[in-house]
Image (cartoon, rainbow, N blue to C red; front, side, top):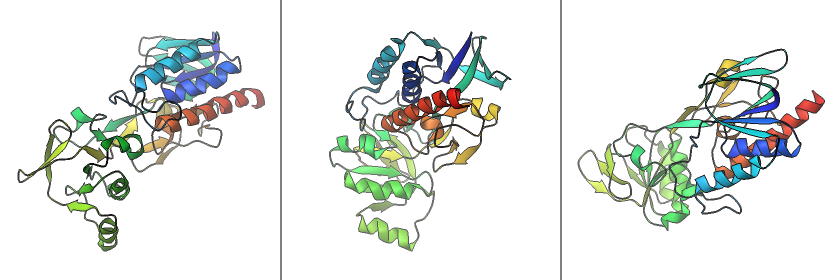
Length: 295
């Protein structure tokens, strides 16, 4: 069988893209490895109508709604290779299966790479976060920490005082210049230049190199991201550099630099949230459908 569209990734962006195509009565295959980026978080926030729900519950309900459409098939497998053909694309899976599609949507997401600081990864999504809009409100204006991972982290430090008193741990990553110091002071940010030894406690208390512990209600860190799937690179898609890592370049319809290949969600955004992924997926689904008609 040749599917109209193969979607790689069944999280929020892939589900949203699939819904547009299913409602256009197109045949769709979704391949999903089952590793959502926000699987570590207990609740999801900022998505209209779903605020405060468990992210897995949102995804499960969306999947049930999508699979109610008879033209959609779902396969729990990992896509490992993709090639172009005269008719479209052939995709190979980790289980050794091959699938053919006229179009392909890459909604495969990214992998977060945190600094190598003991205690950080164990608290990721629980008391260590990257998005203040997703998790800042629940800290109830208590003390917040920001861990520098790059010079871009100063944007985190300048944003977060709206959610609580903020301490910025520069950790030897960079030194703010005079103008940046003035901005931090204006926002009431406490600057901490001592190195971070590790993170401990029920939340994410920061232990410094001299042994002092600074208690925080939550710690924000900007991870480095990399593609969760090799397919975009295999197909020759053009990438752009974002503040956290590379992402797939797309046009207004979410088509990549490779004709017939579309991308959406965290793999194609310089930012990440459920709400943004859903909107991005809707655009990709509609753009892909239109390409089948107006090619």
